[in-house]
Length: 174
Image (cartoon, rainbow, N blue to C red; front, side):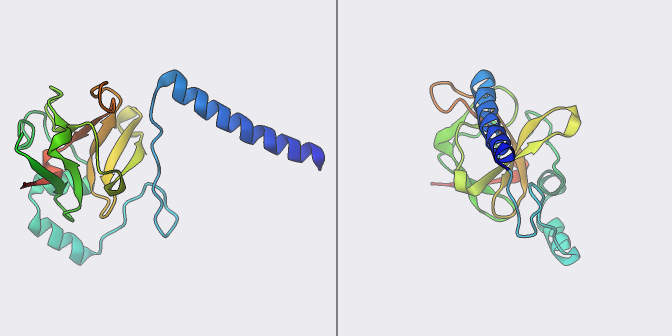
């Protein structure tokens, strides 16, 4: 029993150390999985058929594809890519505030980029689609797909680049 307890503690310590080492060695961010009441982590809350139809009627085809099917708009085509008016960027689905214009910068990638999000209003989920591992960004309120976050943002700020689809956003001027 003592040996099993020692082994269990050793595994916990090794897990903590390896996690810390990975973070320090690769300077990468670990995505936090959000878990719903059902216990499904990183999964979207399903809409009823009636809710889906209302959402399809309210959103553009592109906004629906981006937010509900995890689509990506073509680079340099989004209405907020070169938009620098002062104000707030919110989720197009539920109007939850996501980003301040103060944190927006031109990354040259063709998508609106921000170095900081309103952390309580976004969730980050591991995304292994397309043969690569990335960190997906979703609205924390309605679980709409927004884009991805990368570690190549402004080093004098957070070092992060939230690469967000214009189709997932709506803007309210100050």
